[in-house]
Image (cartoon, rainbow, N blue to C red; front, side):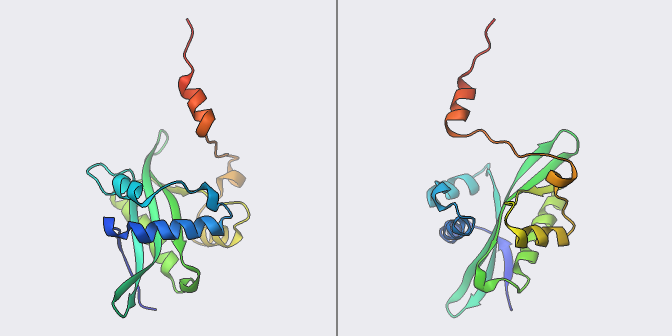
Length: 169
């Protein structure tokens, strides 16, 4: 199958938000998506973007159709330095098995290396065996198993409560 991987542009946000919803349905959490196309445009395509994104496209009669995306952002490790977090890697089901996901992942890794990142990390749901197997086949380590790390999150009321705590003298 003929496809192309390229950096996303602001114009791609409508397709990216569509695929974010498709991924959320697959992950059985469609009600968790609260982001809008306008927020993606604002946060990813300004002078100081919060994230980077690559898209996969296939030829279509009137141009190209966007069939996958990889959304990432930079983080910092006090042990290793510059690092990258892959938030989403998604390919529409009918386009899987043609190397598009592998090419997206490889392209993200290239960006990480160009930016001198020591790590590329991501999270995968425990029941998502196909994705876990895919990443393992590419050499990824499962830190939950290997090192016992757990992903911890504050959001909503717990984030508000934490932000509102003050140190008492």
